[in-house]
Length: 255
Length: 300
View (cartoon, each protein chain N blue to C red):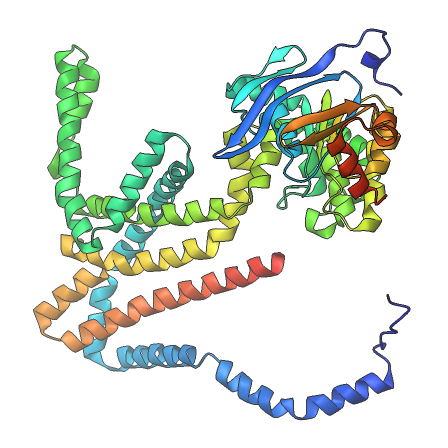
């Protein structure tokens, strides 16, 4: 069941980032990043820690306000207007490293709350959408549980369901498996792989090279707040052009 | 890991043997520990309360003092309760102001908190009741006159009809306590909100919720739960500090006890009874707070 918007020949750029800079005081996290993501594509961002990959991701939905530069989402230039940002964020799901589920709410309430107060869906519709998404991530039986009663992998899958329940056009993943015990990484990656197959536009910051190989249309290597290389996973792993990319790959692939 | 080091099962005779061997000696220590951890202070307070109750029942002088002072009990309770509700609202708003990125709101909130915390409570009570309230009433009157001159007599008459004599000392006392405690509660709310990790706000905002929605549905429910014991403790403190309003001639139990002592010269009867009445209220409220605290800890 591919996304309807992905069947046509022409695909527009759903995310366009132009000359993006982000400074935290003296620290320059992003130094002029340019990036375009086509609709229905899966883009993976890799790079050493402190290279600005998470900052770039967080600038795409303005969770961090860029110091300078432009972000266009689906043809719309983001400004600092809260009303516009709330509307745009509704269309962009985000999954965090530490899940960030709401601990005082049940799993079902976690997945229905934003549908109700942001999308203004009636309770019944919100519930059925929530159950649909929980089914998709494989834990409908945990609907009544509280986040603290779930394993890390289950929590992250609920977080994915919570984002998907808003029917976003884009999904952002910020190191979704980094805080998980090794045996739980696969269950989360499997959900993400399914999502990629269905044609969701995804930007994924990750250290999981297996996922990048299997699902990514494009892979981006970042260092020092800049995109060093942007190509297909095959080319990046087999034929990296830049010295920094080669060094990084040799370190993480233990060659 | 588990197959390398077999863990002893509960039914394992070897384990129960060692456990018994160990548990023999600590049993004595445990008794000592229990005795030292027993709340003796609480027994003492119960004894004081029971003793005083007995004296009040058996001694006519004490009984007379008790009956006289009880007349102020409703004022003490009502003043504390109403002032606390207003202080909660004021404190929540100010706490939100303290964490706000809006420069004006943030500075106003901080100014209020710092002013209140820098002045003794007794002085504040006099100041708010005898200076603050009249100044506010005069300003309201001035605005009313302005409305009348501007040709809006209805609002004008309404605003000029308020006068200082009409604002009773009871009301002023409640205003004074609310404004004072609002600043303390603001700091509790601020700490509570800041104790919730940044990720919660980010997750809520990433779902398209506005700042207000995220605050109301995600941050505040968790924050308030965390600070419930602290809020309870401040209510206990407010019940005690409500005795200061007796200096505004509000007839709470402190004022009535002073009147009784002054009239009968039975200082001992008046102040022992008064103290035990406060103690009964504060200790039982503190116990409630402890129970609440324990339940919140278990829920986690």
